[in-house]
Length: 257
Image (spheres, rainbow, N blue to C red):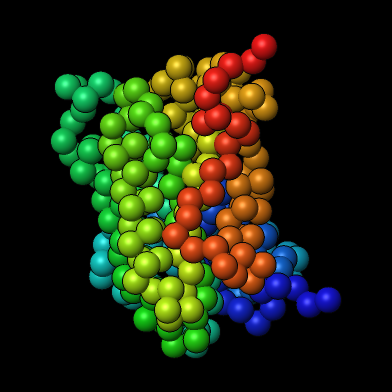
């Protein structure tokens, strides 16, 4: 049986660590040529080396997803190198500081929204024409359980992730007839460098692993990646405009007996 992404081309932002790295590795193992983007050059190089060590194909680009000029250049590069794009994963994101809204600096709010929401907007805006040239494909955006809840101290992050869900649904509606499916994943507390850093500045966030997650543990990047890759695969061919929550039960609500 052939790997599901054999001869397909995928693009992943935030590929230098965490969920993005796990998505990139998973795609490469399924046969895809993977175009990796991240602001972290060292992380990018590490991800590419891991892929190539398993005889996978990877190309890297240092990228600020909030810059339209840079995003345009990256997508043009994908078209020039690979000639097509079948799946895109708009995963890059930052948390911002943990502060109540009355103390939240405007510049931090704007930066979080620029990366997390504007970055997804720019990604889809310029990926879709190339995906159309390939005859259709799939886009998966990384939202968060913060798109469903209101975590204290994280106003910019929550606002941006609610926005990702809204963008996902609009773009899914606009492109379904062209054979492009657009979905989102909503990871819960996941063991990534970004979450570790946020936990240091927000102890209440770190305590969620024991107090609010029925599974009593954080998720592994590979578990989130598996859900994202499934959404992009042909086995999810009738799924579009949805946000798949992968959180160990964190957003179930209620209580144990």
